[in-house]
Each structure stands twice: as structure tokens, then as C-alpha cells.
Length: 362
Image 1: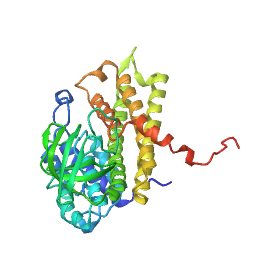
Image 2: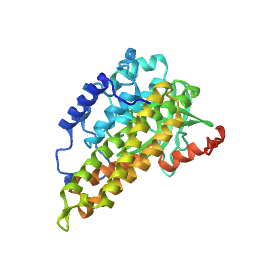
Image 3: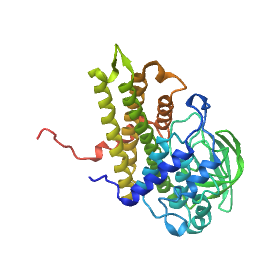
């Protein structure tokens, strides 16, 4: 399979890399505050102005008509520069509307979301429950034109900065999608108390829309993690070349260079998986197996590269002042976004029975 970028993709990569270098965190890593990432309007405006939010959506609703592969290219460059934004969240919310809304809703809601003028994020997670696309605690009641939601969503990244939320809520035994503009928000905690909402599409539309949207979100965060890995490995190699022990560079010790080589193998495996996932979703946006494979491979590769990067740096790798630890922290956070590695591995395992047996010894 050919993963070579064409000229337009190379131009996009270069443009996003230049944007990311201008908006990369200016403070030293030790000054980065801990806790949930905050929304930076200046960075968000630059991302929107370049058209990155609009990349995978149709031109008739304000999109750029590109593919998920371009999303992966952009997200990887943001991750390389340690830019943490609501990019994956906004893409997921836009996909929920694009795949689950009516024609009228798409025409009305998507343009100002895709041009960045209004921040819309999804609300899936519920406190005390494992990751699931299905809603349990939050319920919807009322008629089509007068719907209210009751319950709690948490954590909802960037909820305190969002203009609108796309919320999953239980309707009987099914899960529907609802747009909310005025919820009770405290940080990443969102409380609905008979809060007015607008139903997006039908319940039948919602199931497929959620899968397509979460696939795109997974691709974006997986690519961001890839970018962080792509930054951590060269930092580690350079450290091995310059740091000396017993009068010689650490790179002179064969065991350490072998461990760095293993990191490179994990990085390239993650890169191939992310790009393959982008190509698979361009063909079939509902391909849940492709998204889960990306989550598993990137989760495992990221853990390997992050842990090795810190250990090969020695004590300095553990300090808040050194950048490699911040890349590892972001990779770790991404591993637990939209379902962790074990969740997606279990999802893939449940589908094994649907495949024919292959005798690998023949």
C-alpha cells in the first residue's frame, strides 16, 4: 500500500507545520498548567482560518471536500507542536450533524461550525460508566418540537468554552442525538435539568451517525498522538548522541541504540496504521474495525515510545521542565479518549468469530 503524500498533501502538511510552529506553547514546559486543556481562541481562529475544521466535509455545507487522510496529516502536525485544541472534538460534533442531521439542519448548523465562528463539541461520556456510544443517565422527553434533557455528562472536554453541545440521550431503549445551546456547565461537568434541546435527525440516523463521527474523532486523536511520538523519538535520539557516560555518548552503548530502534519500529507501525485508517474511512466512514485497530496500535505504540523516551532520558525525562514528558502525558491522555486500548481490543475480539480461520503454517 502506497502511503506517499501527493503534492497537495505535502503542501497541507507544510502549511499546518508552519501554523503550528507559530502557535506552539511559548512558555517553557515546566510552566504548563496541569489539568484539563483550556480553549485558546487565537489558536482556534488560526486553525479555522486555514480551513482545517472543514477538511473532510462536503463543499455544499461549507466544507473543503477533502478526505480523512488530510485530517490525519493536519492533526499529526498539531500533535508534534504540542498544540492541544478542540480539533478532534469539533470534527466529531460536525460529523454527528453531517451524518445524523436533516438536510435543513446540516445547512443551518454546519457552516458556522466549520468556519470556526461557533465552537460545538460532543457530549458522550457519563460519570461512573465505562466508555460507550449509548446513553444511560441522560434521558430525553417530550415531543419532537419540545424536547428536554435530564441527567449528567462528564467529562466533556471544552464544554465551558462551547457555544453548543451535541448530546447523546436515551429515548426508551435507544439513543438519540440532540443539540443543546444552554446547559448548566461547570468545567467538564454538564448538568441537564429539563434543558431544552433540538433532536438531530431520527433515532435510526443516530446510530450510524455516532459510529461515523466517533471514527473520525478517533482518527484525529490517533494522528495527534502520532505527531507527539514523532517529536519524542528525535528528542530521545539526540539526547543519546549528546549525553555522555564514562566519557562516551550514550549512543555508543548497543543496548540503548537497540531500544531506540525498537521505538522507531513502533513509530512507523503507528504511522502506517493511522494513514491506512484514514484511507479506510475515506472509503467507508462507518468502518468501526479500522478505527478500533488504530486505537489499539497507536495506544500500544504510544505507551512504548513515551515510556522509553522518559527512561532513556533518565532523571531529566521525569521533570516538568523537559518537553518529552509533556508529549508522553498527551499520548497517555489520548489513549483514554473515545475508549481506551483495552475497550477497542475487546471490540475487535468480539468480531473474530465473523472471520474465516486461516492456517498460517501452510
